[in-house]
Image (tube, rainbow, N blue to C red; front, side, top):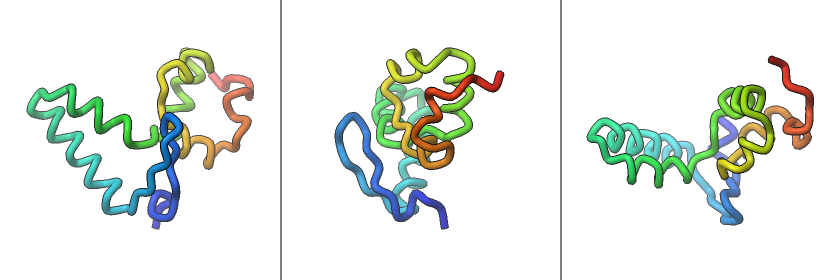
Length: 93
């Protein structure tokens, strides 16, 4: 079972609790919205889910910490995987 199933997710100061089923259901809704060209719904739903840790790290390495933080993404999963100080660590790329 993933960390998502038992984790509280903090997004823009709001606390959210997702079961694994809810997490993947939101992902499915996002996919469907994108497929039908409803980008407003896609973006609204994407704000509810944490960013994949590898994606967050790549964004930080390529664009920098400030850019990543300015995007307002939920970095909960990246913080769990890489530790709280990962944003201040030197880039690997």
